Image (cartoon, rainbow, N blue to C red; front, top):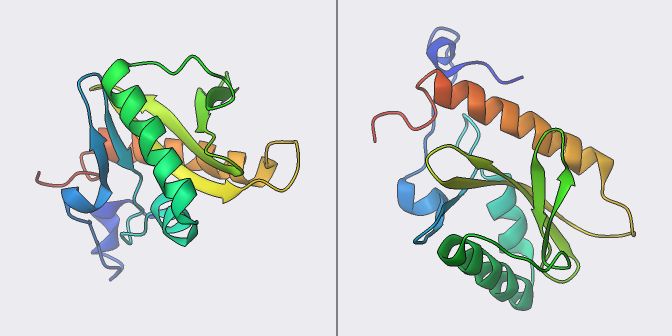
Length: 149
């Protein structure tokens, strides 16, 4: 797990928090959708999206806007739960998958993404999403994730 922000300065590691306009994907009537960012300021899902073709970007943006405004996506070919125990979901724009979870304060946090290569969910990427959710929760509850917004 990552070194907590409170300890990063002690060990000489930088604390890099992106600006809100960098991690905020869309703010709708029902939800605010954000990209998760690491303590070093990296955004795995956003980086994956930036490498994707324009049609993937357009499809994901449409799905995000829809759920943020309407509150639900009923089509499981576009959005579904992939881990009911950890409450991890996925947006499904074409052959890409973007894992996410819901968080208090009407937030959806997009954790990471990948290009689908088989019919099965990538266990490695799903495990990464679980780890990211734990890290996000730990840092938010500790007061270090959003800093001084």
